[in-house]
Image 1 (cartoon, helix red, strand yellow):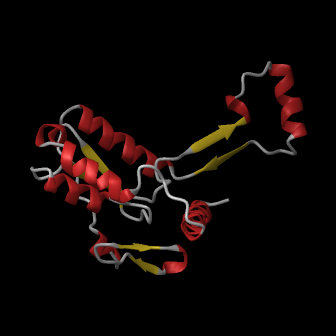
Image 2 (cartoon, helix red, strand yellow; image 1 turned 180 degrees about the horizontal axis):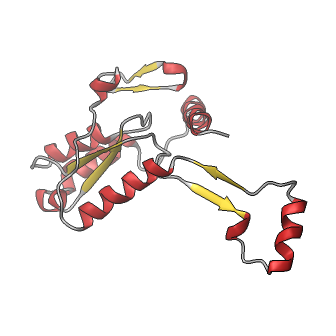
Image 3 (cartoon, rainbow, N blue to C red; image 1 turned 90 degrees about the horizontal axis):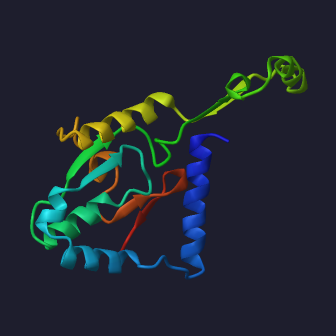
Length: 170
């Protein structure tokens, strides 16, 4: 299963939950209200948002708007390559298993010559790791996030599976 398929499944689940009336607690509106009333400039200065370029689930703009309502400019934002699952990288090889030498040959035969598998993109994961390390070390973001408008939607909209744009009307 590739990253795009997993993201589509996540977006489908989000739509299905919305259609049957389930809501996360606190709701997005409650979260924004809490942030705008409690997340002062001191907390904002200690926070870094990590925003992936192709994250269809990104809500950083709403968070930043709520922070600005609380006073301040909001936290610094680091733009990163990839999607919501960008930092997920798994690489599993038979050589990684702690097997006695005599069992390695048997394991190789039992797996039909299969030596390993990976999921995700190591370079995207490493980019996220490097940016987080830079933040911990007090360095500025390497680059800003691409704003929603740069991704083909405008504020208050999200891109759903199949490129459909979901307009949020309040």
